[in-house]
Length: 137
Image 1 (cartoon, helix red, strand yellow):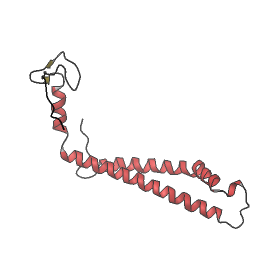
Image 2 (cartoon, helix red, strand yellow):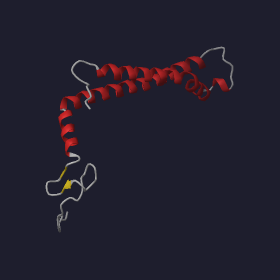
Image 3 (cartoon, one colour):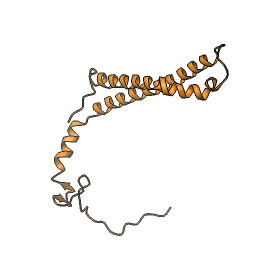
Image 4 (tube, one colour):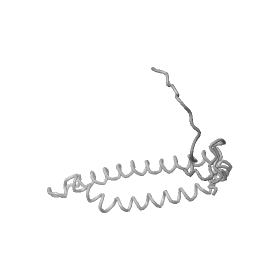
């Protein structure tokens, strides 16, 4: 692999945060407008906050994955039970396609509402868990 050759270097011409050049000092690479923002953010974000937020996100993702798997199993079992009934007559209502469509029309919205409630409660109560999940402004 060929070595990279740098012909010339230049100082930055604008701030990387606000992309303005009016109060930007290229020599110190410091913007007086964004200097306060950087200080506030670096004080408020700690490794504990990042760790607890990661736990919160992973918990919600786990809940959603469990819900998806549960919905699939529930759809399969309920459709199988309906189609295995001995008194069902052959026709369009005795096909997997039709029963799956009926599942998504009538049962899936209820399951989706339940998921939204559970994730909302999980988000709310994990935010008040002991030792973490506090968002700072």
